[in-house]
Length: 396
Image (cartoon, rainbow, N blue to C red; front, side, top):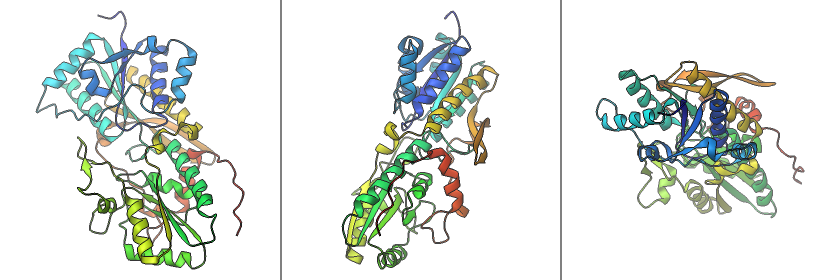
């Protein structure tokens, strides 16, 4: 048995530019409490295979710790592994809890999105059923910003900052020729349009979200009207945009449709912008371009939001403090106090109310025609992105 308890932490799901800042917060919280910090290599799946790392040894000094806070992607490695229901298969839980005991785990924290909260909920449920004293806490992350119970998620602000920066610059590039053109910029967002909606800060002409089915004829009509009085039209479009019959637009470019991951979510979405660019070129005869921002959205640390990195660290540390205060099967969250001046406070929510749920952009924040967002969205996202560098106003 170890001389003192430890805090065990893992990372799961898609990486972000801020997920390691949360990891640093967890480590800092453990050290402040006099506990060892251990990391799962490649999430709960790697931990099941005995893959761990002593984080105190791996990050021995301030320089290495500060570098972790600024490093994008999941430093510990990630996975997409769905635990079975505790009532149907207890063998995997028995193995996990034996490993928890071997390292004298006081608390287990998992940094991730909807599916990671499912993992925390199941571990906590099993732990309670056997009378375990180990505390289980979820630390949110996702660039999709679609977790219930929190005002926003770490990772979103940095991804939004990159998206906005990219759209502003792409608009300048698209406007250099005296001809009619439409540029579709494809933005991540499988089920919810929060990230595409953040592009409002770049002032695109249209924004298309998964929350509103796309009617092609209506889009053609809007673009035709826009092109009648301007040369360059910019469209921010979520990868998860669907047709009125519920099919993904991007599936029209896929030979076998969109696949699914272990949790049953549609995976590897791509091609929405390419389809729309091809369709509009055929119907309106103008120049079109499709730009897929792809994984740059979640790893562009050069565009990271300072607010995002600081808040991610704060939630990681808050997770440790919550566990040591006796909380379990909870997720750390943000309550927003005000937009201007921007202020939040940390909170705790029941992780079972978060797991496997989707928080969509409110309909009231989307324009009546479904092709843009309102002032409420602008006020919401602006403090998360932070002040943007100025660009000279384009010539008319």
